[in-house]
Image (tube, rainbow, N blue to C red; front, side, top):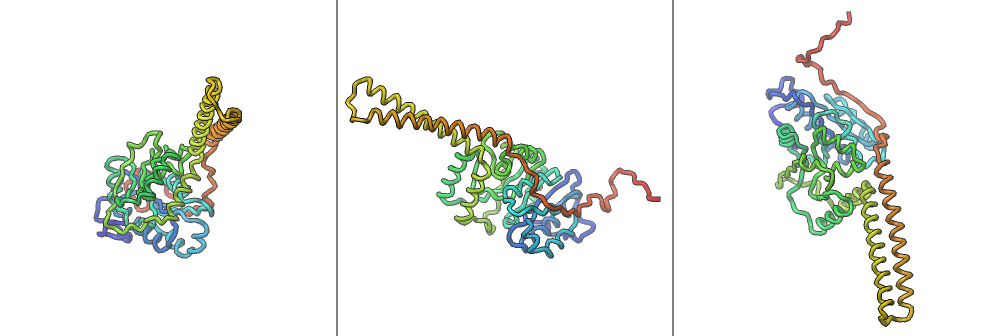
Length: 339
């Protein structure tokens, strides 16, 4: 992660002119190597202290990771303007990213994955966000293998999202974009991959990372399979819509074959014994079955689209060390003396 090197987090009077018109949030998804998480958190704090007057760091950690590395996390929790959310065990990576985005309070929120620390240029992301007001997603310029591209296209067709294996987990969003994502039933996937319908694609700027850097987030075959399962598991309405379309298509083809068999019989075409009755039975039953499955999938799609909401039970504990107005003299607020 690239941060300004002219000052450290211990500097009381940064030489740079700090930006005070925005509140910037950086959310860090603590997962994997604890040393990487600690370095990412401290570098994020260094960047924010040298860039913005108002900021917060949101650290999300699972209960198991917290219990395993309690000493390190307790040390991090004492850092300036850091809030920590301890999530229940079993909260998936995509769901944790949504929690991070919705729990931030900044005008802009940067969601950071520590495993991509070497690829992230916070200053460049900050300049794009504040300059254009657009959300930013990061993309590796390295081409992926043909099977991965083909799988991504298939997932895009099934799920209804622009699935791209080159898109990184780390991304930055402005507040209105987060609000739009939070209002969707498919928010877990829509935060990572842009839906093909629904607009807002013009609000996204894609930033290619430095190709010379060590791409540590290169996914193994198992990792790519896990991503595919995550996409399919978090997009049941889209899958049900696809299944409904497929079922109705099968039913339509069966009806055509039913009509075709009747036409052959009426025209007196020589048929094998039993072919006519067998064709009618198979095509008729297939048409009814396809119609039935299509109706069921459509009904379930409508139900899930209305009921798939945020359960709100992911956060089991919060620790807050944020104080935006400590030693801040330009706030036009009168205070009352305790005397």
